[in-house]
Every structure is written in C-alpha cells, then in structure tokens.
Length: 157
Image (tube, rainbow, N blue to C red; front, side):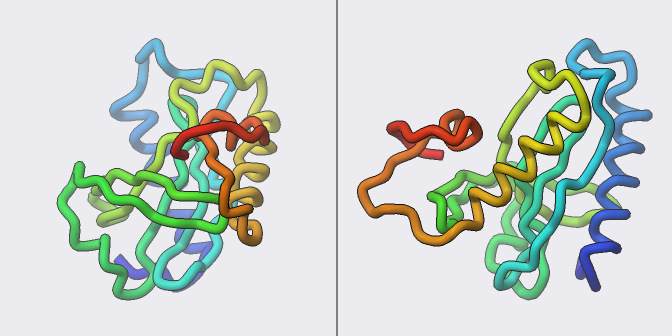
C-alpha cells in the first residue's frame, strides 16, 4: 500500500488498530484500559515512513513503505535489521488487510508501566526523537531498554 501523506497513514493505522482492539483484543488481560490507540507521529525517511504506534497492549516502532523499499516484499514473520542514527534495530514483518505489509519493532509490551495516555505519548515522542537524532558516538552500544530510558548501556537495540 502506498501512503499519500502522514494524515492518511495516521488515520488508517488508528482505524485498523481500533478495530483490532474491539474485535481481537477485547477481554484479554494484557490490556491497559487507561490507554487508547494513538499514532505518535510518522516521518518520511528515505523509502519509508518511520513512527510509533501506541495501543493498550503494545508500543511499537513501525516502518511503513513509502516508495519501493527492499523489505516490503519479505514474508510475514521475517526479521531484518535497520540502522538509524541512534543504532541498529531488529524489525519483524507483519501484514494487516487494510495496511498491507509493514515492519514492527517492539518497544513495550504489555503496557502496564504507563498510568496515562499522556505518559505513553511522552515516552513515544522521546523515543522517536532519540531514534532520529544525529550520529551517535562510534563506540556507543545501547540496549533497547536503556534507549527508552535515555541511558547508555551495552548491547543491541
């Protein structure tokens, strides 16, 4: 699927994941009922859209195809690594009927550490800002958990 702009992408993601919440996730104990489905901003970066999706059950970094990106043809469940100024992240391919193929990297799941939607949104915005900052020092290794905390550490993101 090709997205003409950020507004179309945001609306479609929120609509699809609200339907998933209502139809597939209803009644499951892993939902944080203080949270709702919300896109935390998408930015066009080269051949894809990069953004974060908040739901009551996860917060994921998403890649949505913008142009002819190499990973869009991968099978559902396939994994690949993507480099950003902040570090290397592992993504898993997913497919939804009204979204087509997209790639996701789990940041939080479940979401019980967030008391409010504002807390989750602030974390998502901070993570997205950090992800897209300028180059990190060459000897810096970061874990995903420390990335989200804004701390330095050892390991892969």
